[in-house]
Image 1 (tube, rainbow, N blue to C red):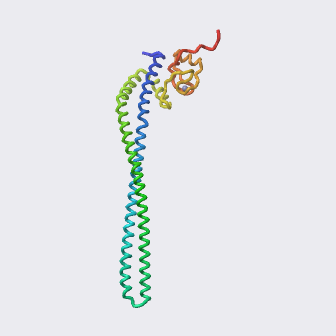
Image 2 (cartoon, helix red, strand yellow; image 1 turned 45 degrees about the horizontal axis):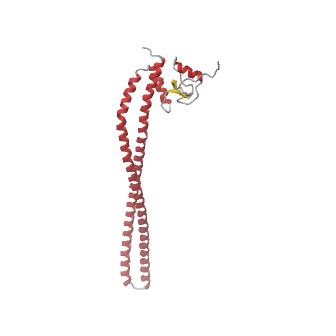
Image 3 (tube, rainbow, N blue to C red; image 1 turned 90 degrees about the vertical axis):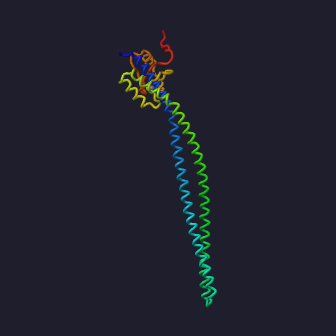
Length: 249
Ligand SMILES: [Zn+2]
């Protein structure tokens, strides 16, 4: 049975309404998955940073151990040199050993300086870990909340979405294939997902370009399917009562 143009437009408008509701559901959910992903990225980044700080600290601690060992060696040498100094045969030998002691003393001072520097760096890294950890904890709390929100929204809208999809499939069977195809194509290209619109206050409800009065009258007549000459959207009807034509009797 062939539908009238008015019936076809009505069917299209109904399909549009279902699709718009589905778009709305996806839009509400749409931001949350992205936010969850962003938070997960942040968390992974912070964890990597903390891992790197800890690795740096370990390297610095190994350095400190090395310098402590150097110090110990130097102290042993100094003790040995001092013993040797007791048994020197002349001033020259005494002075030579004094020089060695002086050298090892400098070695100890240098090691102490390096140890202090490393300890200072470790303290800084620990501060950074603390700050990063607190940012990490914050993100984890956010993530937990967002996940809960997303799960709730998803479970809440799941049934509604399923019902709408069923309704949409049912509604689509009322529309001839060629028309459905162009409807889908217009929708794909439309940012707001609207393929079927009303003329509102003399303008296209999709792109807001003015629709001339004669064209509005044709749209009201529903003798054929009329699309917006600017955006290609299908006009379902004109909202409100027709304006009186400006011509005078
Ligand atoms: Zn338009």
